[in-house]
Length: 483
Image (tube, rainbow, N blue to C red; front, side):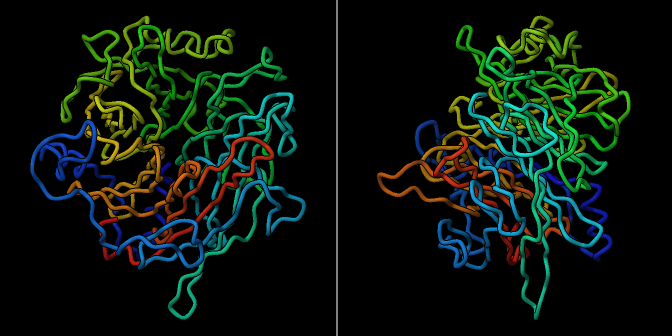
C-alpha cells in the first residue's frame, strides 16, 4: 500500500527533501529482458548466464538489536512499535486486535505520522466481538486501528516512538488490504462476502473509508457501489479520482484462475458514498483472456472496460464470484489472485500473487487511454519462488525502487527491487528448523518524509491466537543503496 503521492511530495518540498518519488519498475523489465540474471534458482527458473540478482547494499542481514526476532541490514535500526492481542502500551483500556495487514502513512498537522492499519480477523460470527463502537456488525471482529507515531532526531540520532493508538473502524470482517486516497483517507477492504447465512447481522464484502483525521471509531458506511466481492487492495489515480480495485480469488470451474481487475468511476471524486459506476477490465479482441499462464513479459495488450450491472448482488454470500461472473460474461479478463496495487508511471501497478508459469507472481502495469480504453503490460513474471516468492503488499520507495512484502513459504522476506533488476533482501523472518511458518509480512509504507519504512507481521487471525502481530519501524542510510 503506497502513501498518498501528493501528500508525500508536499512533505518533501516543505522539508527541502531531494528524493525522487517516481515509481519505477524498469528494473523488473530489465530482469526479464536479460533472461533472468542469476540462473538456477530452483524449480521453474530460467536458463542463462548472469550475475546473481541479489545484492546487499546496506550490509548483511543480522538480528536487530531492538527486534531480535527478525533480521535487518546491519547498518539499519528497527523497533517494534506495538503488538496485537495484548494491552496497548499507550492507550488505557485498549486490547490491540490481532491480524495486522494493509497499512498507509499520512502526515499529521503536529508533525507526527498517522498510520492506519487493517485487521484481517476471520472469527466466525458466533465468536466475534466488535473491537469498538459504533460498529457495522455486532458479530464481526475486524476493522482498523489508527496510530500516531513521533519521528524525532536527537544528537544526530533518529528515534521513532508510538504516541497513541485507537480503534478507527469496527464491526467489519477480514479487513485485508486497501489503499490511501489523495484526499487524506484510508480505504479498508473486506476480503469476504459473509452475511446472514453465516450468522452475521449484515452482509459483508465492501470497502469502507477511514479519514486520517479521525480521532476514534468512524460511522461505518459500506461503499456498496464499489462492489461486493473478495476485495484486496485499491489504488487511486490522483489525476482522475478513479479508484482501481483488485480481487483475491481463484476461479475453480475448469481449474483456471479467475479474479477481476476493477475500476470505480465516482460521481463525486472525494465523496465515494455518493455512488458511481463499477467496471471490469477486458482484453480487446480476446474475450475471457487468461493473463496467468503462457505470457511473455513486455507484451502490451489493448484493453477496455465493461460495466458491472449489479455491483451489490443479493447472492454474493452464496456465490462470491457473482460480480466477477458478470464481467466474465461480457468478455472480461481473468487474473490469478490479484493483491497489491499502487499508482505510478502514469497508471496503476497490480500484483498477481501466484500468477505466471511458475506460480510465483506477476506484476502488471495498466496505462489509461481515452474513454474506456487503455493498455496492459506484463512488466515482470517471477521464474522461481527462489527469485521472488508470491509478492503481496507493495510500495515504491522515495528513490523509485520497489518494496514488496512476500507471502511465500519457509522464510518470509520484505524485499526491494532496484532499477537494475537486482533484489535487495531488506527484512527476513527466519523459520526455525522444525518450527512453524513465520507470519507473513504486510502493510509496508514509508513515512511522509521518506526516512522510515513501516511494516507489519500479520500473526494470528482469530481472537485468542497465541501468534502475536507486530508493527515495526525501520530506518537507516537509505542513501547508501537504491531504495
